[in-house]
Amino acid sequence: MNTTTTTTAPEPASEPLLSADEFMRLHGGETGVELFRGRVVRYPMPGGPHGYITGNATAMLHNFVREHKLGRVFSNDTFMKTRQKETTETLRGPDVAFVSFAKMSPGDIPEGPLPVAPELVIEVRSPSDRISQLSAKASEYLEAGVTVVVVLDPATESLAVYREDDFPIRMHNSDELTLPDVLPGFKVQVMKFFE
Image (cartoon, rainbow, N blue to C red; front, side, top):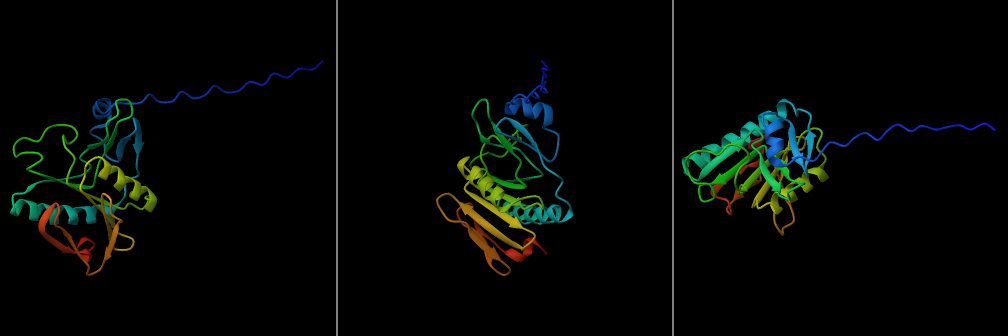
């Protein structure tokens, strides 16, 4: 009688889930990386247009916020917690974030993730991003306490504004973005982000 023994390869060991503290210790100085439900997620570098548009958004917000002494503008993947369950924490690195002095008083900026949810987050769509991913990420920010999320799309030179319990608002060209609930008096034509 001929018997054949089939051997299967062992299952690869899955990486252990990381807490936010462990992630910051191991990956806090890296770019293009986030923690999603305890797992490290790496993103391809988005390239020049993404960086240019992020810089425009940061400069516009920074100038307005500083002039009116409203708070701080963070960029370049400053981490914030969007999910705080002990074993499946999530740390996102928004492209641009605004935190008012009402939420985080003037003075030293603490190390690590932001200690509070920003009032405003701006994300710039990368070439590898799908619209459904960005919509889900905007919802995640809102659930974490962000008041307004703006997603800028370089491909269409348009943006979408997300608020809790509202449908997203699409804007483009000479449409004027205002944010009265987080930055009273701020206004900019959409096209200015992409010029």
